Length: 125
Image 1 (cartoon, rainbow, N blue to C red):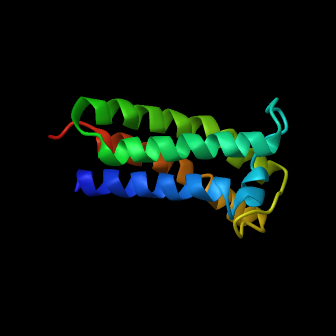
Image 2: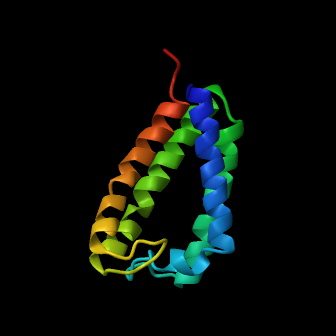
């Protein structure tokens, strides 16, 4: 079950990374907080590359290496959470998140992604 979850998370990350670079680029820019000192489009492209890299690594890694990459992915999810929070606080639309309620509910998905990354790459019991 963990292996399936790990590969699925990897596929989702790769898909999201491709979306950052192509069809959803504008929507992702809505999540870049004002305090990020880099141009929003550059931030979106950079995070897309990171997501593709992490997703590929998670999908193909095993054992101790998978655990390290899972920890990196969890840290990445924590690092990008301020973008989700900024989108909520400033009421920016993106990805169909066109109400405060929808943007608020989305905030709870980030901890779930952190847990998914850690559980799916964690040690077998």
